[in-house]
Length: 90
Image (cartoon, rainbow, N blue to C red):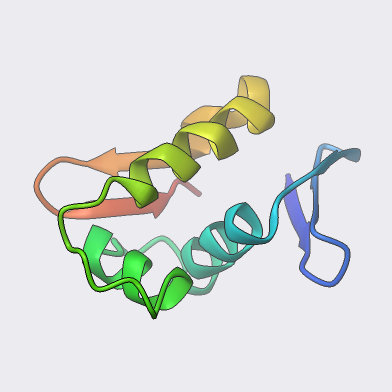
């Protein structure tokens, strides 16, 4: 079970808390709100970094990689959907 505290930027994985950065927290929140639907890389970039105009940046990938590192054994919950984007496995 995954639980996100957006105010304190903490994700609880089976009750164990892990601190997140503001960007990691926002990325995870976007995926949670999508409810298992695919969220495109462009949509994530626009929601989490609205002022960054460079579409060639790899900000999304870098921050998702760091988020997965923090999720540890539960990292596979953040699924890459090739050619489409990302989603949370339920």
